Image (cartoon, rainbow, N blue to C red; front, side):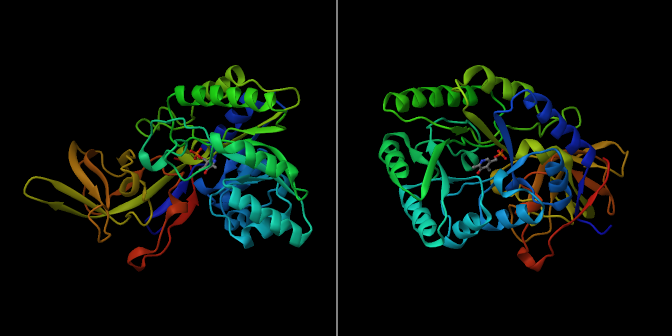
Length: 372
Ligand SMILES: *Cc1c(COP(=O)(O)O)cnc(C)c1O
């Protein structure tokens, strides 16, 4: 296979999905939606659908892909701060489960489109809970200085408006505090905020049919071979013990990264080993066009030489793209590396292939399934 390409181990994905289902099997009132923006590869979607997850979308394109891959519209929820009219119309025609609405202005437009198309929309309001997930600034979403969601002081009049609108059914609240969260504390804080808010709303006569706590569970980028399955048990136990659900209330989760990150690797070939005055560079044929996370967020993925068994040496592993940020890792310990060696960049199943671009007129990466 011509490098670079993504390799997906569907066995790891299956084990991951089984782990999720083990933790949620006893809860008919819990619903897990896979955040399709993490990876929309049809091979993966097929398995995710087989294991009964719904879908969380953030664009009309994602809704189309979810429907094309056989997901039932009734399992699709739709978030995003900038829903275009065509995306709203597409969702109404398909009959998706719920719009996660991020502003009053958006609520007005959804109501307008419903009137025009003679449809009724289920509405959850996305609340900005002002919980700091303590992750990278680029992937924190739940703090006050953030474009996502509606701030709590502004919530009540918007709920009243949604409830009064004949085209809309207000079903509940939606939260999503960020991504790659490995600490339990932010999720506990989120539960406390939700409990408090729910008490306040009930005191004013507002009841919620559903609560959506979003996604954000992190994965082990440092030791992926030792920890291929995220700690779903601790994650779900937080919500089991800390969140006070009311009788009949439904709880929704939107997991992305934790579902697919560990089942994918980016496979690339060494084009050159270049000796500088102080550093050695391994120049590979993949760049940020295939995997942008290191350049974009300063993320680090474990890098392994699959060919060489030579002594360990330090290298900067870089791509061919004409940007200085096109670096996968600095001072990486790799087995002695030469031109032609195959390099694997691990834990690349989430926000890898879906974020690929054609910069420098490159082709989009291919993908295969294969056991690691
Ligand atoms: C991205 C996103 C998710 C998934 O986040 P992960 O960190 O990948 O689990 C869930 N909900 C919403 C609204 C999102 O935008």
